[in-house]
Each structure stands twice: as structure tokens, then as C-alpha cells.
Image (cartoon, rainbow, N blue to C red; front, top):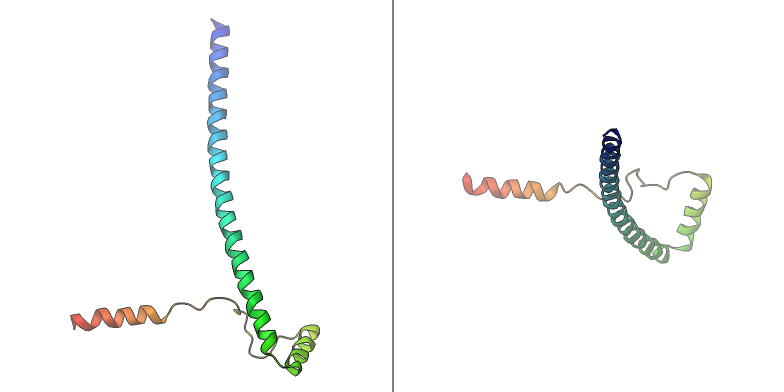
Length: 107
């Protein structure tokens, strides 16, 4: 009888470990999918920024490029740059328009 209960306990432990493993694998798969999507978005953003950079290089005069290179080498930021460069601006205008439209008919 003791051997049978040990086998039953071992089976329950094995089932519990399998359950933990399947939950862990599911969580890892979900995280991998999220990371793949983030990588895809970052690759697209990088491509856009490279295109923008190439366009700006083509539009800049040789003097502007030389001035920019000097600033990069000295470590000083270019004039007019900000710490949020590259970040998307907050969508402040559409909510203001929505609130103006929604308050118009009720007034």
C-alpha cells in the first residue's frame, strides 16, 4: 500500500510540474510575440529615420554639414534641438476639437 501511495504522489508531482511547464511556455511564447512586434516597429522606425536623415543630408548645404560635423565632434547639441527629438508630439489638437464639437450642439 505504501508503494502505491508513493507512486500516486510522484504522478501528482509530475502532473504539477507539467502544468507549471506548460504555463511557463505559454507566458514565454506571449512575451516572444510582443518582443517580435516591438522589433518590427523599431526596424520600421529606424528605416523612417534613416530616410529622413538621408533627405536632410541631401538638402543641407556643405557649410551646414561641416558645421553639424563640428558640433558632433565637440559634443555640443545642434541649435534648436531638444531632448524629445524623434518623439511623437502629444495629440492635443484632436481632443480639443472633439470637446468643442460635443459642447456645441448641447449648448
